[in-house]
Image (cartoon, rainbow, N blue to C red; front, side, top):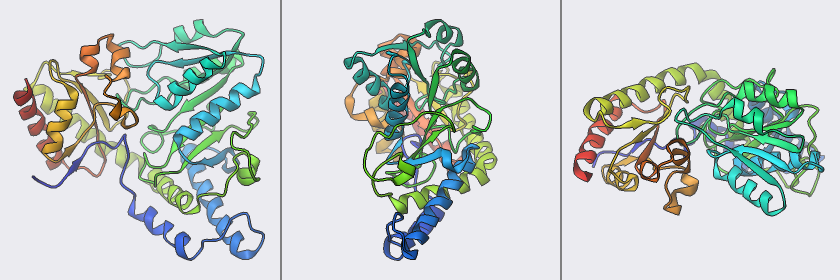
Length: 378
C-alpha cells in the first residue's frame, strides 16, 4: 500500500505547521489566564486579541463582532438560540433539509419545546429556492438558519440574496459557514448576516475551537453563563493555545485564499473528468451549481457507498459517504436524499473533499483506484 492519500478535508484538515508553531509557547511558557489583571495575564490576553483580529479580517468583520467558542456546533446552537431569545413572542424557525446535523438536531429540539420548524426543500441544484423561502416566512418567524456551503456536495447557497430577504422581512439570519470560511471569499462588511458560524479545524487550524460572528447591533444573550469572558458573551476560561492556532490559520488562509482555490479546483476538475470518462454513468451532485472548489460528491449507481469507502480505505485512500458527524449512523446521506428523493442514490454517493496540498499524481492514483473499485464492487 502506498502512503495515505487524504481526500476528506471537509471532515477535518491537518494542523498547519505555522499554527502549531504559534501555539507552542502558550502551553508551557505563556500559560497565564487572559482574564488576570497582572502583566503575565495581560500578555496572554494580547495574544488572544491578536488572534481575534486575524479571524475578523478573514471574514471582513470587526474584532468585537467575533467571539470564540468550543466548536462550530456550539456556534450554531448559540447563534440560533440568541435569535430565538431576541424574539420571545415568535415561535417559527426556517431552515433547510440539507443543513449539518448541528443545526437540524437543534431544530428538532426546538420543535420539542413548541417551536414550528419549516424545512426548505432543495432540488437537483442542491441549493435552497429563494421563492420558497419568501413564501414560508410569516409574522411568527424568529430566525432563518441556512448554511453558506453544503458539507457533502459543496453547493453554495445564494447567501447574499437570502440575507436581503431576511433584512426586508425584519428577520434575524444565522448562517453556518463552517465549510466556506477559508475556502471561498467571505466578506461580511456589507452582507446583512446577523450570526455566522466558523470552525478552525476545517481550515487547517486546531480542533476544539470555533467562532461566532455577531453583527454589531444584533441582540445576543450568552448561552454559557459564567464569568465575563468574551465580553460577557461566553462564560469559561478561554482555550488560549487553540485560539492562537486559529488566528494563525486564519491569517494564512486569507493570504493564500486565491492560490489555494485555483490549485484545488484544478485537482477537483481533473478527478471528476477522469472518473466520468471511464464511468459515464456516474452522477456528480450539484455539478452545474456554484460549489466549493475542493468538493465533489459522486453517485455510483448500484454500488454501496460504504463499500466503496472501505475499498478505497484498503488502498490507502481516505474519502467519506457523508458527514463525519453522522458516519457511524449507517443511514443514507440526508443531503443526497433531499436532492434526489431516492434512498438508493443516497446510499451510493461518495464525497471527495480535496486539499490544495494534494498532488496531481495523487489524484490520478485515486481516479485509477475508484475505477478499479467500481469494477470490483459491481
